[in-house]
Image (cartoon, rainbow over all chains, first blue to last red; front, side, top):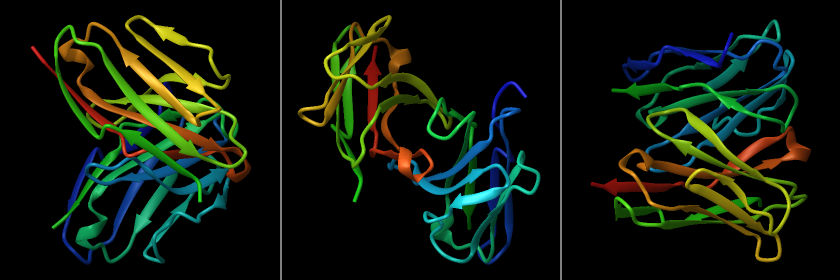
Length: 113
Length: 112
């Protein structure tokens, strides 16, 4: 695609529910990153994929968070047993190679009520 | 621990004013610094700086890196209401897959 696409753009869920957030990167971009941005803060790194494998998941806050990229293209960020503190904008970025020319998606605003 | 700090956190100016936004960093194996503009949700790329003392310019926006001071500034001259946004500074950590370490952002509001 022409840009990085994230769906849904907004998601409201009840505390304790499971959510999936999708990122469709630019075609051919092998590196994919997930970030979380809380209100009034800069984005914080969650996880980085190089191809299909999670090369660095050190930013995932706890084991309720998990992400996959099974075919090296689309990635899904999965959050189990959501908590109100998970409310944030989740941003996805892709690049042709690691550390080179990042393009960000429009993000998913997750609200846990 | 790698760290990026921006100041001020927020700024209110009137159209026509000139503003200077600051970014300082403490990063091992530094290679580059990036500036983004964020309106609504998606950060959009402004500048990438790698060499100290060389100004990058795009219209009314310019930026420069000072490796000795471990800092960068972003200048906006003759501000317009459309410049209202959050400005983010970020440093890629190349030995950790190129993940970005962001500052907190500076929220700029330009009043008519």
